[in-house]
Every structure is written in C-alpha cells, then in structure tokens.
Length: 444
Image 1 (cartoon, rainbow, N blue to C red):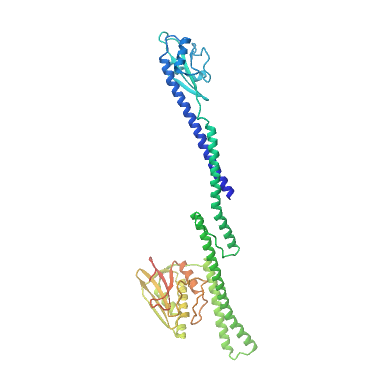
Image 2 (cartoon, rainbow, N blue to C red):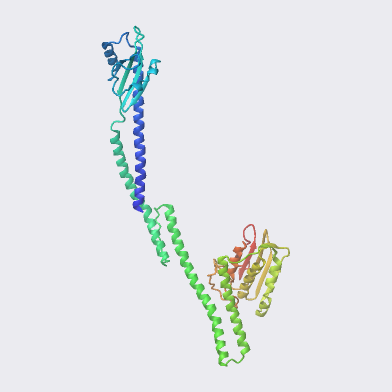
C-alpha cells in the first residue's frame, strides 16, 4: 500500500509539473514571438515612411543602420508579383500576402524562431516602383528555460517523494494496526485494543475507536451469550430432571401417588414446551417470519381481557391483581400480538411480585399507555431487561414462563412501532413496565 501511495503521489506531482512547466514554456515562447513581431512591424512602418525617392545600396545601408537589424532587405517585385531578389532566410513568398502589401498593409508572421514583417515602399520620385521592405528578427524563449524547468522538476519530485513517504507511513501504520486488530477479532481474540494515536488523522482515530468498541461489544455479547446458554440449560435441566425422576419411579412402581406424579410430569413438560416455543418465537421474530395485521383496536378491552386471564394464578398465589382501564382508548396495533406482549409483561410482574400486581391503561398527556407494576425486588439501574441475553440478579418469588418474555415484548414492540420501557414506579419499590403510543417522549 505504501509503495502504491508513494507512486501515486509522485506521479500526480510529476504530471502537474510537466503540464505546468511545458505550458509555461509554450506561453513564454508565444509571448516572445508576438513581442518580436510587434517590434519589427513598427520599425518596418517607420522605415517605409522614411524611404528615399530611389532605393540605392547606400540608402539600403542607411535603412539597415537606422533599424539596427540583421536580415533587413528591400526586395523589388516583378510584374507578376514574384520577388526579383532572394527573400531573407525564413520568409517565403506565400507568407508575404502580396495583395495585402499592395494595399499598404503591414504583413507579419513567424516561422520557427524567426519573426518577420514586410511593408510596401512607395518612393515619392518613382511611385510605380514595386518595392517591399522585409525585416526579420530571431527570437528565443526564456534563457535556459529547459534547464531551469528540469532542475525545478527534479527538486520538486525529490521533495514530493519525501512527503509521500512520510504521508504513506502516517496513513498506513494506523490502517495496518486496524487490519491486524480485525484479523485477531475474526480469529476470536476479543480482548484486542487497537492503539489510537492522538496525532493521527481524525478518520483513522475514529476507525481505531470503532474497532475497539466493536471488540468490547462482541466480548460483552459473548459473555451474555454464555450466561444465556447457562440459564437456558438450567431451565431445561430442571424440568427434565423432574420428568426423568418421576418417570423412572413410575416404571419401578415406587410412586405412592401416580396421579400426582403424572401431574408433575405434565406440568414440567408444559414448562419445557413453553421454553421451546419462546425460543422458536424469538427466532421467527429475528428472521421477520411472522405476519402483522395492524389496525385500530380498542386498548382497554385487550388489556382487561389479558390481565383478567391471570386472575386464577394470582388468586392461587395470594396476590392482589388490580386492573384499571379507561374506555375509548384506540391504538394502532395487531390485537393478537398486542395481547401476547401484555401477557408477557403481566407474567413477568406475577413472577416477581410479593403482594400486588397493578395494571393501568389510560392517557398520559398526548400519550396512550399501559403500565404494569409489581412490588417485587425491582431492577438494578441501567439493566437491559429487554435483552434476550439479560440475566437478572433478582430471585423470582415464583416460577413462570421461560424467562424470555420481555425479549419477545421488545421484538414485537419494534415490529409494531410501539415504545416500551422499564423502571421503578413513583414509590421507588418494585418494577414498572410501560407500553405506550405517543408522538412525543415517553411518560415520566
């Protein structure tokens, strides 16, 4: 990469120098030619106006002396316009434009490094004489322009090569460190820390910080995944142990109450079924392999029906279930999926509550919200209770569900564009989970 970057920079600088240098030479040469032509045109006009009656060698010598030019000549023309004597070097008959000369105009031009100017002379004593004064001058571009250009190009290329090497190292070192870090992350080393140089470019420093953040996030996810697998393994092992123990006891004929043993086996099997169902539900939600029938529905009816479905469980557990809903609360949602969400939230409250579970549905300003509160141990600050890998430090008062209910709540809320948050109620004890629809911020 460094070689390519250095080569690219040097090539760009070389091309720019060549274009600028040769363009300058061409422009300066063109300017020198125009200046020479302009000067000898003026001199030709002055000399033609001062020409004597008859052009003699002495007069021509005087003209040359006055003009101080080399190559000045007075050329007589024949009747057909052909020069009767040789033209100065570098001037051809076609370039004289005899028609323009006959009209009294000054003709000028250049060929190679020679500029010329020609004008018709009208002697006062012999106005019919066809005489043309031709003046030539050799011009050149900047003195030693090519040498100066070569030296400038060489010096500039040397400086640009040094700058390119320095720049390539400054850019490539952080990139090489970033590449090495990503390769180590891909190999499973999640404790990678890419150094962030304070003197590097902001973009490269941001890249290094992003890689470090990625590594930390992957490391955290790996830890949470291990906790999740351990939790799921425990949830699988416990009912399987009960099922196996009672099944073996029934087979050995050592169970005093087979009906109770069968009931325990059935309950534990349903618990396993719920865990597997929730795992499959999360997989379907991840892959978006589920359908939604979003429509306007009456929230109070759904909340009341869902919460009242838990009353047999709360009565059996000695809990007070307080359900309060306002009428006329219409929201946009899939009724079945919304009922599933609320059931998981109420089930979570039932699992941790000590004496009471409260379900409220109503308006909070412009928001329509459902709040489910329990008086359990509460949640720690900053806990990601809706993360499927979240492992709580709280000890539930009773077993219920698979432990994945709130993760399913978060997925369904996102799919239906519903907001959900968890925190402590106003009393500061227990947990409050709020599901709300609102154009503004969340309540509280």
